[in-house]
Length: 389
Image (cartoon, rainbow, N blue to C red):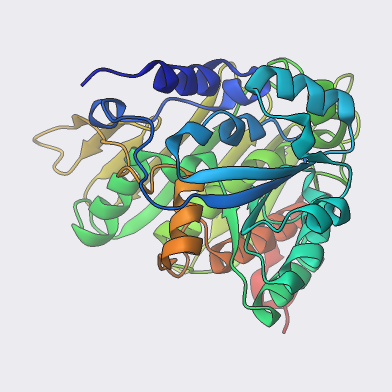
């Protein structure tokens, strides 16, 4: 079976769509790439998009042909931006509203995805959770621990799903690493994890002005590189360690390019000390290249995830390492919107501390909060003292 033109267009959008492009890597396996675009036979999930200023929004605007979701409304007060994306993706401007109230008065979505600034995530949850509408926000969950707690309380009170989407959640290499480390026990108990996430900088890679306006703002984004890319390692470590919390958090942030990023850090190193292991998160807008890679070291070997597919594994030092190319996730849960459809329409169970889960992402915000405090004070944060109940 050959790739359809529509499928090629999806891959093109993922690979070449502005600032979003620079972060995203193709993660579909060859087997998945032979699938027809419209794989889904059921009723699509009726989704509203809140905000177009997070350029990850191209991901959902460029994949509606799969058949599992239907965009029924968009909230974006910036009409020029909405019109630009309308021409780019072909949606009708009749879908666009200038407020959440206007959208809800005209259409009743079954689910909402938030692609606005991170500070605005709380407002989205405050509006839609009381109406019983599930919500998926882009990473991270919130700008700070105060916002995260309010969002979690609303989701619990109104019994709605509140998910967080990370690009790295859909890497086949990460799924395989989790299986080998936690189920197959290929490398022994985890002793250390190292995460490298980031790129040369949002200005350097060509992020559009609407994205830069809030991404480089300490209030609207909650920080700079520490928030933008530190959340990935925190999320993956919490997943792999099944919700363990660190004993101590130490962080150093730097501003190597104050002329470009005068308000926020552009480089962060976060060290999480657990009872019997350590996690090092290196998040930066100063890499020479775009990267999202993970190293897991056990007592007898290691698993490296170089990107979404390419892996290197060492089980026995005498035998030496071997390379492995991971398959993509199964069609139907292969990306955030297919997954969201399964959760809302088909009652797919969200694993406790899974990468998209609320439990995991509350811990992510705690880690980032502790890291910001450590960087500001120059002192190590003791978890139990910092987060006293």
